[in-house]
Length: 204
Image 1 (cartoon, one colour):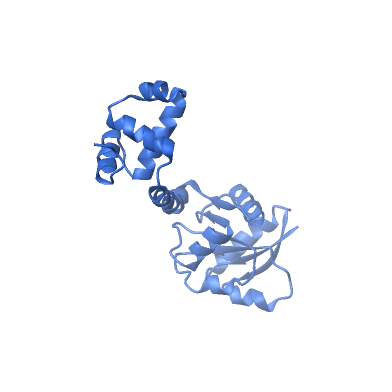
Image 2 (cartoon, helix red, strand yellow):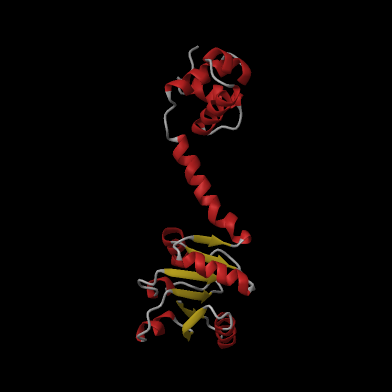
């Protein structure tokens, strides 16, 4: 069974969370406190720390030590070291009013090393990831095939025509066009050609 420590500034919240988890019959609550450091004084091995946060979590991440899994209850994506810990090591982020079923699922996911996010927190967490992917793509050079596709776009060919000229399926041609747009950081074929000309990727 998992040993869970509940950390919250409010005694009422700590007691409520501890009772909800203990009442599930699936977990043993290892400690209930208002600071993470108090947990380090005990002898029990802790599998998961459940932290209730109001956004003022600065410094708490340093107290977590080598605890493998953290579940954060908060109404916002924490702008602190806790956020960095979640991104690097996994864990869970749920709203403060999460149901017991959601808590159990999040604790299981965190203990397994996964990142579990409530839908309201997902966009805040994933937007930086998406931005990073775009940045990486824009830094990659075009492959020889993608360079061919860019030349054909400059000649005004449709996806269907590109597929015929390159002897590939229309689906593959569409895939190459999308890759060219992503690597050039543009949203349209016209923009791709314009950027390609500025970078000397398109023959005049």
